[in-house]
Amino acid sequence: MRRLLRTAPLAAAAALLLAACGTTEPAADEKPKASAEPITLTDASGAKVELDGPAKKVVGTEWNVVEHLISLGVEPVGVADVKGYKTWDSAVPLTDDAKDIGTRGEPSVDTIAALDPDLIVATTDLQPNAVKQLRKIAPVLQVKSADASDPVGRMLQNVDLIAKATGTTEQAATLEKNFDAKLAEGAKALDAAGLKGARIAFADGYVASNQVSLRPYTSGSLIGGVNERLGLKNAWKVEGDPAYGLGSTDVEGLSGLGEAQFVYIGNKQDAASDPFGKELAKNSVWTSLPFVKSGDVHRLDDGIWMFGGTGSMERYVDSLVAALTK
Image 1 (cartoon, rainbow, N blue to C red):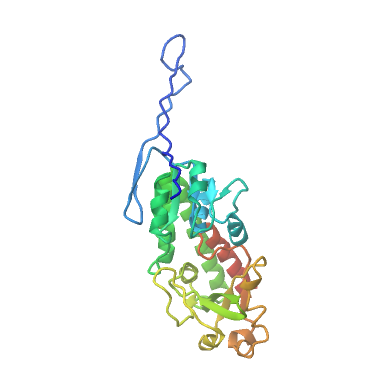
Image 2 (image 1 turned 135 degrees about the horizontal axis):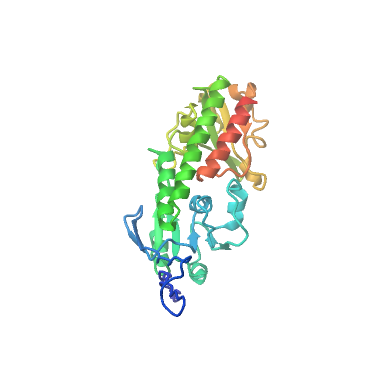
């Protein structure tokens, strides 16, 4: 078996020796710099995570945690699928300096070890065997991937946990304040347009082997949770999964929606991501749907990651309000 590279987390900074006038007393205008205090956290897996101080060299194995890190002012040194992140999440841009550590499902242990991180942030979706290997390199902080019982609350809790590990709790408080303000602003704009309580159906879709697959975002999804906080009513009747609140249907399954605002996100760099505007454009079932006939189908801006953080959700609110009120 290939031997794994192992590195220890960075030690806390040593106390600085200060000297003035031949003594160890600090000069009048100098202040001794305090050492970073150790941090102990319990992550979503129940594991105790111990850090010598706020993590600075951080690796993110999933796009949502990468977005959280950047939003908190922590540029990750390693990111899973850099190209994919830049394609799907331009709401919170990634710099070109981050090292690609492989796929989100199977990050490269050797690549991460070479970065010598002092923290690896992952979600509970990452396989236990992968997490076990990563813990040999550096402390691993796992956040719960999603929770359909409180999708928005879960997102904010994840931000708070990462902020504690990186010493950015003040930034986290600002993010939450700005996010709440954006929701209030969006709700006010929709109310003024007479759309309070309007029925909305958000979905995405993909084409594989000439087969169209559609994925409803129920009220348990992050998008669904944001919609409800904007005063909108989720029109989906299908049941979503207990984590992400996502369902499954086909074009015939859309016939039960009735009158609604149908909203989706595609991506110009992914040709298979917009069946609504392409493959279904001449489909007789699709063209007969009430919201298609009435022109209430809205493709939102590219680059809004539907499972992201406050930055993506704020961009979503702006894009949604603009589409519904134009």
